[in-house]
Image 1 (tube, rainbow, N blue to C red):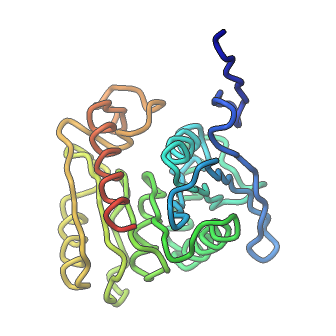
Image 2: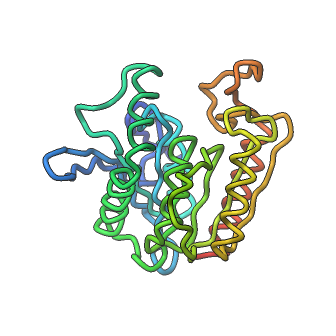
Length: 255
């Protein structure tokens, strides 16, 4: 007799029951209520490693949830950060651009929201000494900020993230290892920004890598971005799969 597999709906995604335990977690930044998502695997890896996921500019979407679930299947505990707040979620790309722009301009506030999410990952059971931060687009910028400010993480991974920084900021020594996964045809990140970032990494003494993916533009990991490169943001299946494997190799190395 074949056994039946039970399924549950995880925030719009259908997943097999017993693989992971998703949970909504509310926390605060002063008076602003934030609501992140935590997944604790049923079978965690040794030393309880954790991965903080920083979303793209639209906030927590199915893409980030899928990533969290896939990591849980591999035994990694994850937490998806809420950068904006429960009553501040963007309704469209125009609002998302404005909100993401605000945090990029007020970088210390962005750093605070990342650190608060990191604290929640630890509170949910992840080993505070065994954490990696990953981020997508706007979230990729956030992951880099976690490295720039030497948050207590082993490494960071930025998928098609912005690389810019205020030139008035002093370049500090960077301790976490850095992996940048970048579309070779990403027009949203100018050549000058890439060159400045690479010089920053050299000056900071960081252990860093930057991988380019052919025919890939912005948002190459996001299936909802469509497949038309001429729009500047589009999904690329090959780049998505290759960057995922690159991330897993990196995580295994640093953790």
